[in-house]
Amino acid sequence: MLRPCGSSHAVENLQEELQLCQTETTRAIAQVDYIEKRFDAKEKELEAVRLDLYKAQTAAFPTVASLTPTAIPDPVAKAPVAEAVGTPPTPITRSTASAQLSERIPDPDKFKATRADLRRFHDAITEKLTVNRDRYPTAMSRMAYVNSRLSDEAYKLIQPYIRHGTCRLPDYEDILDILRSAYGDPNETRTARRKLDTIKQKDRDFSTFYAEFQRLSLDSGLEGDVLAPFLEKVVSKELSEMLLNNPPADYTYHTLVSHFRELDIRLQEYRERSRPYTPRRPNPTPRRGPTYIQPERYEKRAPSPQRNQKSPSPRRGQSPPENHQLAGDPMDLSNQRRYNRPNYRRENNQCVRCGSSTHYLRDCPEPDTRPAKFQYAAISRSPCRHSRHSSPRPLTLNRSESRNLWKH
Image 1 (cartoon, rainbow, N blue to C red):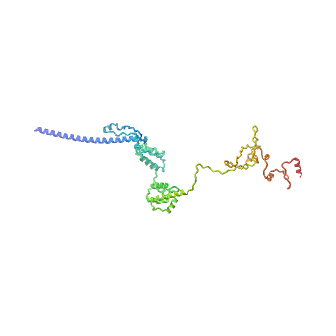
Image 2 (spheres, rainbow, N blue to C red; image 1 turned 30 degrees about the vertical axis):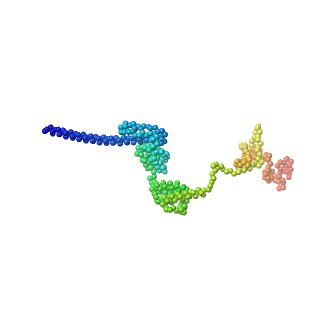
């Protein structure tokens, strides 16, 4: 009777051990399934990281694909982990990766570290990094690009965040926030509303003026029909006068903008028609009128000295005058009018009558062509008194004639 009880007890123990083994086996199988799922997920993440790294390395290559692409095996396919999981990913060639990149947008100008240039730089950098995000896949590459487009003054604001050549900020938006806090206008809305009151169109066309007006309206926070009175007040005087004779259908903002554009087009056409026609020459030359040169009377050239004969020096203690060439043909229009000063001959030790530098007026061989009264006034007379009816003394008198003259 004791043996059956012992055998039944052993069977129960074996059954309990079997149940424990089954439970442990089920638990181990669940753990293996969980580990395999985690392993697959990590493998996918590793493949994505390697693919991004390869794209970042090939971002500097040109976007033109080669005509005969050659397949370059991807190092990811040769990894032992990839062989254990399954088939390796499709190898990516350099030409295929370059062809997949977006078209490169030109680099914007560097930030000038001024409040007026902040909006332009912010919009240009945001557009560049949004369209060409595949060329700058990591935050580090984007921040490095933004820092390269800063001037020296603006770079000093970002320099405290750079350690060992790497920017420690999360992304490039944080760099733009630092620039905005340093160079932005804290009262941008109020400033824009003040400018809406003071801006004037003046002599600009309406399209150019409206672009500036729209920018200020966006900064001011005003929109819709609230802007209609501002626009009507700041347009040019010509458009305001045309608006009196040609009112719009209604005075809403968008209707008023369209109406002002039509009036401006008509105004520009009127100005073009009323502008006087001025023909343009390809090479305009200054117009010269006829020039007349009056030759001096009885002007003769001084006799040229011989080879071995020196020209006589002037009697007075002054430097000899320069040789004065003749004026040339009086009908030659290429010559310009020349003005001879009245005292030119006297100042240059020349004969007043003929202009020669070899003699003076008293020794001039040329006849005196002046009227008789001027000739008589120039004759030197003696200090004695003559009668009223006496004739003038001749120029040359001998000794006997002079005695008779004194007797009378």
